[in-house]
Amino acid sequence: MFAPVAGFGVTISSMFRPSVTEEYPYEKVPTQPRYHGRHQLNRYADGLEKCIGCELCAWACPADAILVEGGDNTADAQYSPGERFGRVYQINYLRCIFCGLCIEACPTRALSMTNEFELSGPTREGLIYEKQDLLAPMLDGMLAAPHPMVEGTDDDDYYRGDVTGPTEGQVEWVRKHRPDDPTLKTAQPQDVTPTGGRR
Image 1 (cartoon, rainbow, N blue to C red):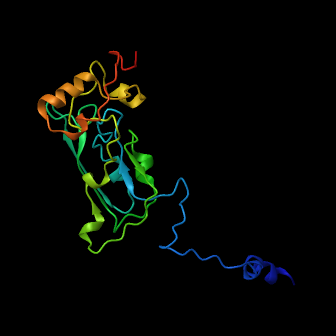
Image 2 (image 1 turned 30 degrees about the vertical axis):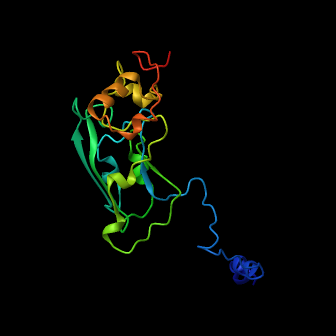
């Protein structure tokens, strides 16, 4: 007898609660810490990019919203530790469903999701974000890529987090090849041992 009424228990109990209206966009309520918003391509502490162009995020995307094309690092153009970097990186936010599967697929933790959710725009082309739109901002102390890896380290040292910032050798390399680079003013060289740990 009470089974039909019990089925509407949540509905009936909600009828007597006061309505809560968020006055967006005039009053912006903070999102939850793990909210899935706009993507971000992260950097290491010395400024090199974490993306290695492996395309695993593109393969994991159920909406086919990600396009990645890898490129080879060279001695004069080292963008990430190791042999490869993400030369082209695009996310089509007209397709993205913000599921986060791309984040789980990334082996170097290069991709993360921010709390930014205001992604509307006047054109469809503007919602296709390129690599320069997705790269994390340069923090104080970082040195803009390309530049060599920390002397005496390999990509494993970067993955373990042993690199804590640019070295004097990296700063000198950028000063020689790009003397007008604005990050030279804020770069904070670190003293690093050949194994990748700080002295």
